[in-house]
Length: 156
Image (cartoon, rainbow, N blue to C red; front, side):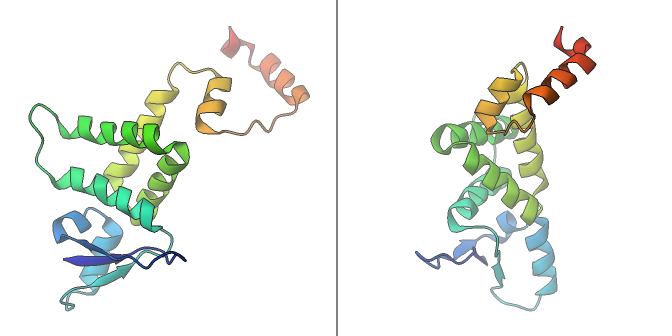
């Protein structure tokens, strides 16, 4: 077992006991374990990942190590994780999980999450993307007009 310590919060100091097979899905944790090979039960701090986000990341990592459910492939379960996360918690939480995946270097989390976002962007207008994903429109009306004129082929 590996003990993961999320960023300190004012509410608690929860530590997560994680099986080795799950923990090594993160390259950062795998490298920490190599460095602490002598430790019986290593403790790995994750200073920029909060407790709630770490719990979600560990849920995803468990998907990677569990056997496929009847009739459900791993890819489907990974995408369903992001669908459920978005429906229950919103895009802010999806972004937090993706940032944690980047920090912890979990390739399958990053690639699945980015593909999930790309799939949801397909067919959306610019305004729909801004509303759905919280993108800020930082163009002035004059800049928008100029871009539209310069790239008229894209708007036909």
